[in-house]
Length: 418
Image 1: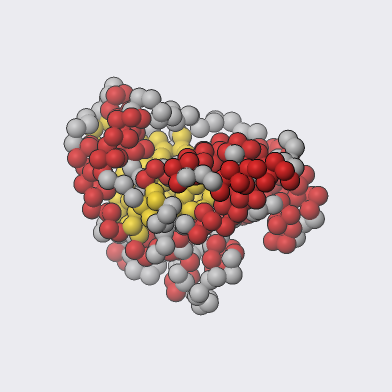
Image 2 (image 1 turned 60 degrees about the vertical axis):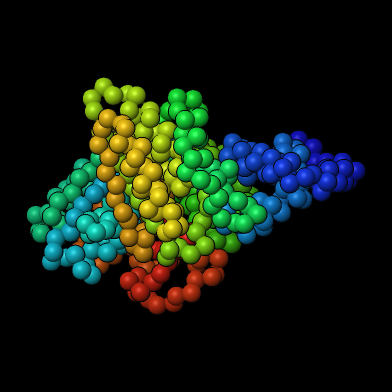
């Protein structure tokens, strides 16, 4: 792939400037699609695909889009790392439902990827990454919490398949930096994708090639999850490794665990966000019901991710508070026509937490996972400093809270970690 010479670059720049608003919007949509399919490794490649000048492409990706509250996230192949994901729901007992069982009670001690308090039920939901075959250790730990009265009950369900989703740019106004659509638009889009463009969720792998990954690879992947670097050289300082070492591990190992990239709208005012998890269980043999349910979920502007367990199809959605009632109304009306049972969980946004690859369970010397979940009812198992490392406000040195207690810290409502 050759870099365009100055004459070619000048022509592309002139053509881009002379584009009308419709053509420019079309070029931006092509850029979104190119990022989804090719990632951010080669900006020159993205520029040639879209016909946007190289410097303009680079500026739009790293400067203009973030101004419109658009961020990028990587999709990690957890199975390739030797990790299986599980969905857990549990309810604390009355004796521990106060300041004992905060969202950090699982923290790093259970392998949490995502955890949130469900309101008004005051129960908890978590998605965890656990090494293959080690889930029995988590069962034992949770059973012990039930026996000792720390929690009332829990359920642990294997996630057979899961993926994160990019936002639909046709529902978002870059000019105004906000969502812009009607629910009639959403309905038309749902009919358009039903049975056509909605990808089939692939089954999670049952084996693992994690032997090719080592501790440095996991560190690189964790940095990509926290914030995608503009170049590999940007990882030298946080990882305290030399440039050549990082590039070798990225190109030969870590990169293989990145399934793709997605674009996400981050909230301008995170405390005004409304977050939900929807869980749909279809009646036996109703494959059409699942297809219709997925078309509804994928048509919603605010759907962030989808996953399947043995008995349920699930998806998560976050939206500005003013859209919450309409989102629930639209979804309820759609599922009234589908055979099956839909339940939804309203999440307490101030307790939301998204972690990264659970490297605390990786034995660097033995080059393998060593999973020993330790969950305490006396406080968060993960240290406050470990939680802060996972927050982008802290990474960007824009954290506005400096207390030493996780309960007084607002990092869990940071829009960059939702």
